[in-house]
Image (tube, rainbow, N blue to C red; front, side, top):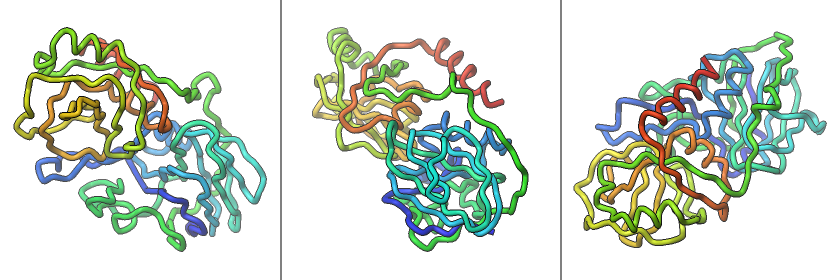
Length: 303
């Protein structure tokens, strides 16, 4: 029982919530870039939240099903076809043996998520199925999905009918305000530099991938001339020598030596994962207590 990959698209990977407790070995966390969309897909299927999932970053994925199953599709709004018939996203679909599935154009957003009932039968590495191509870990031999790959799953004949409530389906816009928790190195940025940072509009550059998002805009300067390399948290905002902010994401390096003005709230990093090159970013300060309450509220949706 499996999907056969007819066309893999440019960059499709298997992910779950990530690989933890190995950063001291230089192994990045990795994991799903947009947790809201991916966890919604699992919730629709009544899967465990850490079940693996396909993260599809570009159009033209095509799969052939060799058994009956149920899947959910969320994330970026896209043209989704079953046997050339256009279907809606953010809901469940019953798949029969012989069906051809295809992801067409992305209309809004940047990443599509396709989950199957009970997940794909893929062995874990370091406790996770998440693919990290630069470390050749997870997924299928540590690489992106290729034409001809076989994605095994357990046959499922349930006739489930569920969809995500329209009220809670994201709207992907061209401008995003991200909330920032100032870091312990914020004192190395003058009051004027911080005001500039929080009152400027930045543009997402082509240097945007699962590792990081580099921005272009008003240059920010720190009084520190580099720092001793140290661990980097998800969402950390590094300010390199050119003053252009870099937001570190799921496949970030485990240590780095640039000053950090703060960290983007993780749930805003999930929104960032759906933004396109050329989109605009603003920053807004948030204190740690409010940030913790926002995180609790976010994850309570899926508990």
